[in-house]
Length: 619
Image 1: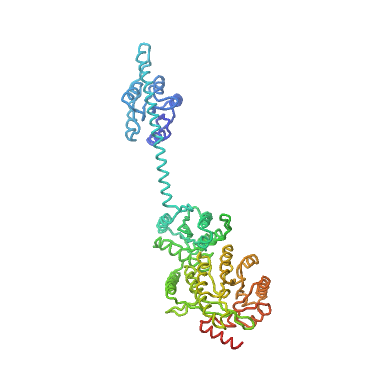
Image 2: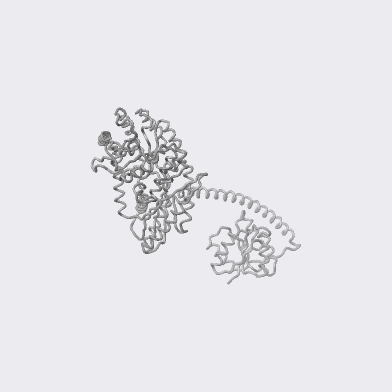
């Protein structure tokens, strides 16, 4: 294999020539300047040398002089391959010094190889004699010309280097700008995760690949529970901190080949690839990832000094070798996610076709609910609250929906939906306004003028920024007496942001509104928050009342709540009282107020007023 020596100070030039010549059957040796080339050539003479002109340490012209002055090397062909050509005299000088060919960069590979092989076949054309005293003048002129030429080459090289530096910087800036534009187009600014656009691209590719393989894949649709509440109470900056931290945690739960993207808001999507061929095994694998995500997301967060607990609901849809669009796949996973939320949140559900039908029913119900608000299809029912002597102290106002076609719709069917959609706010306003109007209407009747009406207030309603002003406007408009309207709040509502709860409760207390904690004992019952809130009443949850005469633990819980309330000077009432034995137990342990079917079920207004007259007659 012919041995070739290449001389150039640019690595990319060496790499190019070495690849070209090696690929055409030559053994190539490289050098970075003339001095290195001379050493290597004298140790292992090549059959041909290819050299640049402008190089550090020793340039190509000097190398060429030494080469032709060396008895062992002067018969070896010398090709000049350079990009420093400026004038015809430059080529003339190189050839006069003994170069066998002068090739300009860049040269097409075929052209270069043709010239290269021509020189190799032809050999050395002429070997110049070393200068003698007789031709000293010519030698001096040649030397002067060489100095001038080298200076010109150096100037040109400096200009080229400067231009090259400017070009490289411009290219770098353009590349940086292009990369930034590309990143903005496909990645989420907040979390730096792939955005919806890139997610859809990858899903399309994944589905195309899936059509050619037997393994299952899965899409996990991840939605944070109660994220809107965090944004509304702590601000979007804290919400953004949570999204960033959740994104970081989710990345630790997936494999390298999987995709994690932020779809928008508090929604994330994970694409799992290469799951098992068997659907049941693939489901187990996807469930394991989902369970890991739920556990990871559920860990506490410290957001700008604020301790926060979050949870997530996940919908999963498996896919494999099936005709399905990206939109349909995401829709199915989204449906499954809502099933997880309906199951109590903080859980995972797989897509099932029956879910679609359920969602269509839900959508129809939501549409009907909006019409109900416009057409005032709601009614208030009242359930009396009495003491053990049978005296009526008040009533809890309970909403009912009189649907024009479906009849009476139970609250459990539309209240959760109204809370999810935000319709609970206008519905809640109607309840409070109707209760105020009823209190005012009862003021002129000796039987009802001292009655108190309790109204349930949802978390969504209470946290609304206009809640206090809206209630105060109703109280002012109806001009009801202080202490006649009572709001029932849940423990989770007030503890979600206790500082806000105290401020709002105190503001409404100044307008004469009383407060009761509903379902007490089922949440985070503690003395600490009871002492902070302006409370008037605790309402013992019916789950304890139902079993307290048969279950010692429930009996102890009830007695403890009663004792705690009495010691704090807070009124206590028990709901769900259905048996005389339950009433007797409560009376024995000093719970003075009761509510439940033992006394009356919730009644429409006319029935309730008739019930009051009967009680009045009997007592």
